[in-house]
Length: 343
Ligand SMILES: C[S@@+](CC[C@H](N)C(=O)[O-])C[C@H]1O[C@@H](n2cnc3c(N)ncnc32)[C@H](O)[C@@H]1O
Image (cartoon, rainbow, N blue to C red; front, side, top):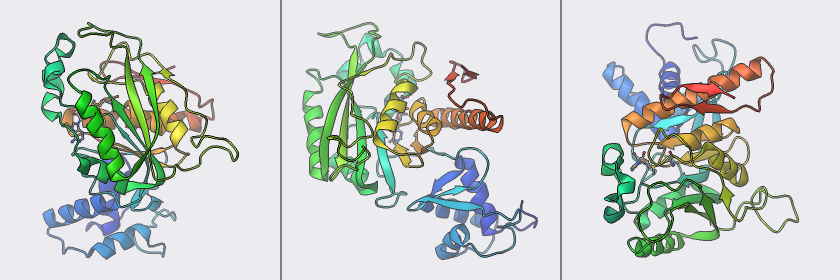
């Protein structure tokens, strides 16, 4: 597509966005393009010129070599390269401040944060924990919720996955609710996820469920048909009754089907979904499969690479099915080795 030897801003931006999965926030694109140009000793452009390269629709060298536009704006400050197949964004960095996202630029935030709970983490349930992401656990502060609030569109949903309450975490769970409220969120609903599998129980009750709290930024977006008493696309169920994956690729992996249900309830096709704590990547694959644009953060490189590969495969499968014009109602299942099988 690009003919000359000295790469243009368009070419560099295209390549850098592609490396993330074809979709990227503008602030990230600025950073990557400038880094590349510094490394190549090319005179640095003004940020305006980079933005201009993404949105300029006049003819020019390189950018319209195929006769098509190269980039498309997906949401405020979020751009994708125009290509066959789905676009997604995998960021191997911390999601806690969400600085590279503009205010009111995303339609939903999903978060299954790796909570710091030293006593539970020592139990038999958490044997593999130390080899997995133990060093990446933390406790939220009010700043986490302010960041989520800032990036959401008015009425957008935040869905937090929280552990079952116990003597160790009861105060922290109360704090989380307080932080959300202080940051400006409105409580929407609490829905248990019944996961069925109850591995090596310790403690006082069977651990067969977790909890999902739905909050909205101000008054919820109305995604339901006019006249319905709820705001989500259909009414939220009283519980999500979906079995946890039998064989996990990530210690904290939640089922893709659970995420599909949630994302479908709180967003519309083409919306931008931010997954703050990628893990297995199931939420991002779910988003892609139902035509949303996922931006997924994962701080650990080994997981972020897996997520990238999973999303790429999911996008390729979707594309091949669409090209053959067959039934697109498929299920892509990933084995422990990361290989995909189509059902
Ligand atoms: C509880 S797991 C998420 C599991 C995910 N919901 C799933 O279904 O697979 C949390 C993940 O967040 C990652 N993580 C921890 N701190 C992070 C941070 N500050 N930013 C982004 N990712 C982080 C961990 O490496 C871990 O993979």
